[in-house]
Each structure stands twice: as C-alpha cells, then as structure tokens.
Image (tube, rainbow, N blue to C red):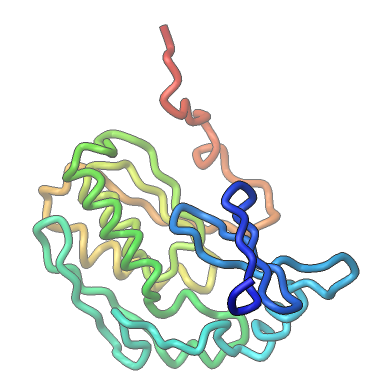
Length: 202
C-alpha cells in the first residue's frame, strides 16, 4: 500500500488515510465520499451563498466583474454585453454580471453547431436565469427561437443586451424577454409545445 493509497479499478474508489474518494465524471475527477451521519456540503454551500462569498477562491478567468461592458466574438459578430457591477452588492443578485460559465456555455453551443453536433436553427430554446443574456444571444445568432427569462428586476438589463446584440438582421433566429419567477406557474408559451428530445414522430 504505497503512500497509504488503495485504488480499485472496478469501483473507482480511492482511499487516502481516513477519507474515501470516488472518481466521477468523464474525466475522473476525485470527489470525497461523505460518511453516514457526516454533515453534507449543502449547509456549507448555503452558508457561503448567504455570506456572498464564492465557493471557489479562483476569480473568473474570462470576464471581469468590474467592467461595465464586455466584448466577445461569437458567431461572426462582436457582442457587447452590458454589466451592472454595482448590483452585486445586493444580496442574492448574481445576474447583473457575466460569469465564466456563461462564456463557456455560449462558446460550446457555437462550437457544437459549427461541428454539426447540434442543430439549433428553428428550435425553441428557453434559457432560465439568463442574467446578462450572452447565452441567449448566441443561441439566437445560431438560428434558435429563444425566450430568455429572469426575475423582474433583471429584465431591463437583459432587454438592453438583447436589443443591442440582435439587431444585425442576419441572425436567422429571434429572442424575446420574459419574466419568470421560480415556483410560479409558467406562461403557456414557455412550456408548450413539449420538447420532442429527438424522438421519431413517424
């Protein structure tokens, strides 16, 4: 047992000293397995959220929360996304600025469509918690009929970004902005028709 470590190829469970780790996901990232009776991570996550502290110490690599405007090339256009960094001081408000995850998801959509792995042209796309709207803009530029949603106090910024970035006339798709409060009954146009998930309809 060199280095106090045992690894089983079948279960992908790794034991290090007194902690047990399991390899998860496609890339085999190690995650510590919680023991029965041990306090879960949910309490810690909620505490960090309540204190408005990031759960990771690394700052965003692609975007800066101090900028009022971010520029990003996507789908042959230079998108200009307006942010409201001062809103971050309001508890629970995270949609007023861009996050790395939005940039990564937007570029992933663009790459997947360019690689013919995903077809968005004419598809109905609903983005929940759209924030500044980058992902919705990219989906519309890729030909989707997009409905971007967020809480009532976030809609003004979201509308500005949609209008500023989707006026090129050659996007092929469209985007509309709607209020959606989690837990409320959604409007019919958000839930109908139900997605077919690629099922054969013949």
